[in-house]
Image (cartoon, rainbow, N blue to C red; front, side, top):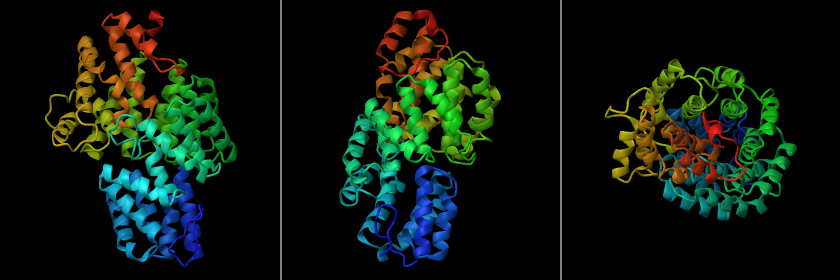
Length: 434
């Protein structure tokens, strides 16, 4: 039987279809362009190749084409009776993920990986900071992801792709020395891996090594295709470095060239999270508001992401609605989430609606109200998924509220409690309280 890169059997009789699938999966795992086209080639050669349909569904879903993802996955499910036990389990796992059955999917994840630990597409769906576990609404999920990757590591024997994911998990868990060693080994083994570049940047951010992040990303992005899914997001990371360094002209150029809606290479959710985070953090650093950019993000969110679904992305939709003064409308994201939370149908419960009230208070200049609302929530930010670097938006907003409310002692306590080693705090006025 034909096998994939990780020596897992594939139900196809065509070596050419197998080769196209292996190429597609490699591109999907490293976030390089061409994965969809390669999956389509595999399907054209062997329409009964179930896992090629699954791979295609995952790629088009992250690009924001839900209808195409459903169609591709329906084709895979229709072929599930013809495949091996591993492939049937692979399909059943992603069926739970795509249906939003998170708890059942997490249980299936561990069962599947106990039997087939080298199923990389399953690992990838669970291990990134906003994946299945990261988006589960649980506290302690960063430790859970790191423990999962620790357990899988012996099965990958220094594989560059796995090391890039493992390093990111270790970094988010605060194990920076081990993370740095793994990510350096990963990018040396294969620099053409956007997750490697991503992991390297995060580790630099968490250890205060912004100069290394700027140097690395500035060079790496020159060779990464502009239509690569992570081009916009990695440009956002580079822009954060420039904001931190006080290089507003360069940060603004990166926004215009790679992060703004008409330039970002990611799907609808990535566009709203990177765009809104850049604009909000720029304002916290003292830059003037770009009202036209906020309006564009607001309209994009309403058109492309009309319903709640993912904590991290919903946070940034809420930001856009708060900036555009939508907080009194009954159908804002916060109100939608609140209704779902009351029915037990939103993973992080009422956390985001409470957070929305804090941001709304900040936006209208009620800084004491913002502090009262945000301070109890700041320690629970991992419940929305995403990385610690992304959660800094919440912490920095609370810090700016303390400064605006003339509560320097509270601001100093926040700074003293900041996780050790993390990069500096580009918030206007913070230098005066050091």
